[in-house]
Amino acid sequence: KAVFPGLQGGPLMHIVAAKAVALAEALRPEFKHYARAVVDNAHAMAAALSAGGLRLVSGGTDNHLMLVDVRSAGVSGADAEAILHTVGITVNKNLIPFDPAPPRVTSGIRLGTPAVTTRGFRKAEIETVADCILRALRHPGDNGIRQQLRQVTYALCLDFPVPGLCL
Image (tube, rainbow, N blue to C red; front, top):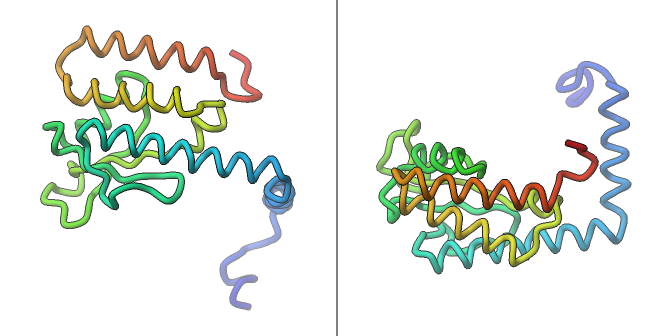
């Protein structure tokens, strides 16, 4: 009774099927390689951003995502989210521990590596993305640099299309 009907209105068969497919895929050896690549890419991203002068809240990452304090770049989390969006990089503004900024502004951004890993990115491409992030945040008002970075991210998207998506 705690699950059905309490938390679940009915056995939605499309959701049951989706879970079955996801669990079947997770049992395959390829999934283990994919999961390892996601974490390896996260480590590469964390190292590159840290080397570029941004502080990772936990000092690094052990999984697929990271929380980055962007104050050292002279921008807020909300500004970083907007700036990176203009160059084709999606992140979320995020509060950091003991954040002095209001919740709608924030001092951090959250980013992860599953989507780019699914596209086939490896360390070299991750380092390119990290460089784009660092350059965009260091030069928030430079439209010329933004245009250059947008071309870099666009080229990466062309070279590594979303699997199964034909454009």
